[in-house]
Image 1 (cartoon, rainbow, N blue to C red):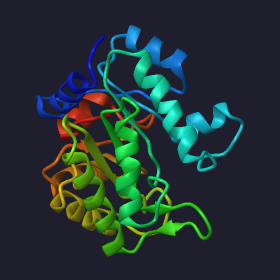
Image 2 (image 1 turned 120 degrees about the horizontal axis):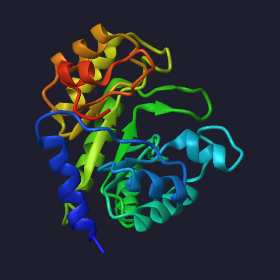
Image 3 (image 1 turned 60 degrees about the horizontal axis):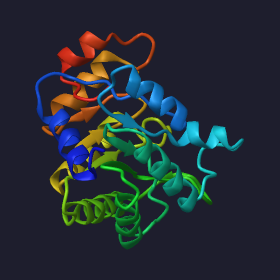
Length: 225
């Protein structure tokens, strides 16, 4: 049985070695075991995929359901698992930190923090609040006795709430407060991918699309695909 600390160290090392690695999205324990058997080195849960297995839309899963889902997948495999934790089920920084602490108790070794509120009036959080939320999550992660990797997500491009320049401004601020990985989902061109990667120094996650080529994303500097 691989310990959580060992998984955390392996996951952090994947982001520090040369080249890119692919991190697929299991929907459940069965697909997680299949992906491990195929040789993938780490997994990342998907909020929309999990919601679909429950017959719901993305954003309609409770925190308790999400945490139990992550516990099941983390305990089923011997490779690191990071979670799509949406907005961490909280608006204020203190709530984000609490969700991160609870996530660490499930066997996860990382999770994401979105700057997007999908509740009453879907929108991105104000800049200062978005940064404070990431900082709170990073502080909670760094207080753990094993490496817990925080991926800070700038959702504005994907959600069509602002342009790429604003997304980059947010990613740079997330980097400054200690986010371990940066992610702007919704990039559709090689040029935009290169622009994001060139603007920051931390590892960047890229959501691939059919027209992207893995070797070109890696050459551009993408760390996690």
